[in-house]
Image 1 (cartoon, rainbow, N blue to C red):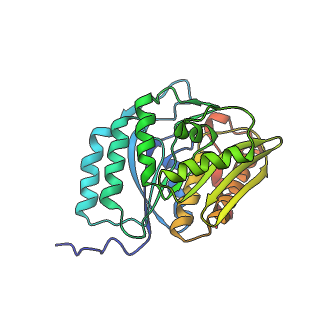
Image 2: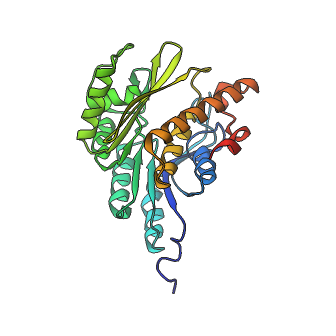
Image 3: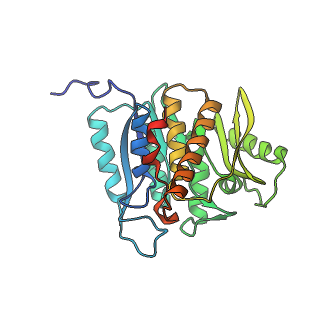
Length: 278
């Protein structure tokens, strides 16, 4: 008979996301990034892809039906998590499963990070139905930290999207999101001329953090960003410091990928600069 608690001697984050074999996104980037920050990464796959959907063809296997039994075995092992981090969810059923997972595994001190991967450039992804948007709005109540991009913040607050924003409008959206449950929010990807800004909002923090814009968006950068924020939260790193670190690291990854002439579909060559992450 196994002793309860023997598997809980190290900080662990349950990462709920899809697994793409090629293209550097989701679990494939979260696992090494979180591990580099000295936290054990425990993946809970929602689906398996040969390569992500940005390629012209891909193999896909839905893991939804297997998720409950997978989770049951974690519970039988008595696993406890310092953090729970959710990324892209492919159906209303998966969102329900994740909500149940959080309720079953959350303990005092568990940090829940929700990256509501719903859309970009002002529009929901084609796979995101109105029902799923509604389910995600409900899931947000469980988040301690929420990491939406500007499009997702608009969807979650029923705010019409536009190209130019005043700071007070973004602050207002963040305040609406905090009323739904999260204690800390970072709204990412705010274009300000030649800069990209992230708005960081917490009880003790109200900052727009800017960095010089480099290259263009690539697959996996949001996953890397949220993974750093999640691991840092478990390690009790100051939230604003963590957001700045994540932003600078993503910028470094993009620049290295440009230097190596990595195709946009192939994500970022984070492996080349992973040693700099601390």
